[in-house]
Image 1 (cartoon, one colour):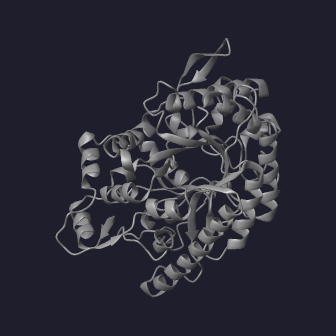
Image 2 (cartoon, helix red, strand yellow):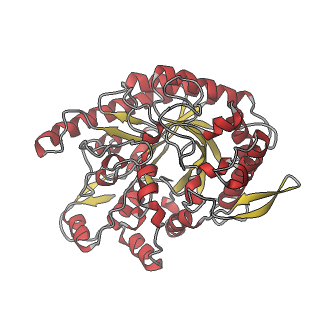
Image 3 (tube, helix red, strand yellow):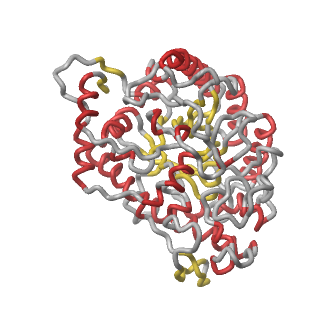
Length: 478
């Protein structure tokens, strides 16, 4: 059980808060307001460009030990106990419940307590994306070295795993001390048009030179997937038991056309930019969906068979885009086969960046069933709710907005239960953050303007004082 009230306030007062831009990722709401994919990985986006380049400072072992030791507050003050979400969701839906966490958030002790109390899964908002693993060296390649791939020596960029490892090590220790309350990690993401440095697609890893051929890009793609999956999930990796799944491909379907995302989604966005919010250099090189199919083949080749593999996308309840996602899932599914030969896909990741007013719960249910019909399982992977136009951040409007959020989350949660009852596996729900003040919606997205920072938002289950909001009880009740 998690206690709220005076003890938490005392803890807040005693703790120096680390207010780093937190999770906001892939997306704004589902509606036609958003055609900009960069708005979608906004946790990632605003953090990565503005702040993650500072890299997470290693605050030392004592920090981690302090966070883990806090647990339940033993204050003498009378407290109201609230149920742990991980227990109630397991009883109700039988699946994981997770949250996004990024930057310095793991060193925010009250937030760490919420995460370790209520969730049994986390997604790193930025740290496992290509730009992070290349050390945020987005303008130029950080250096090269030689590697062997299928009997051939190739030149590859250097990978730096230090950013994710600082966070992963905290969860490793938590799991060692709390084997009955383990927290697993969702890898996010291997292949994405955004937050992948443009130089990765060019000769000599120099974006001023021509693009490489499809054949050369295949080698880079296979090498990158091999290195990342082997490092984190290989037999000799200290993290091999930490991950439950990985997003293989992210946001490869166009909002505008409902077909594959191209290199010309936004005419105002130049491919020569260091990173792209909308246009895809993957498509520019391949001119087909082959990179998607190959990514799932390589992931199947190098991932342990127990590691789940996903496709992940936003605006997934739009009828037009849903048709495009269905076509992509079917294309991947059609080529399933043994490791080293075929693809493998475990579930569809529905990001769930919705609005308080849209999509409808029926739209969510319809989309989930359609995806589940192909791949058997769905997950909500980046859930949050953008506020209505009536909400201005004032105390007067807050109570009404909180109630709107509660109703919307409630209807959608029941829709997921209906999906499960229909025979489609609902294997996880993940919220894109924990407390409102750290949501990506509170910050300006520097990759495409996913959030303009001009609208008051309260998208998550806990308020700025780390207290549960009315929407919390939708998932807490069993």
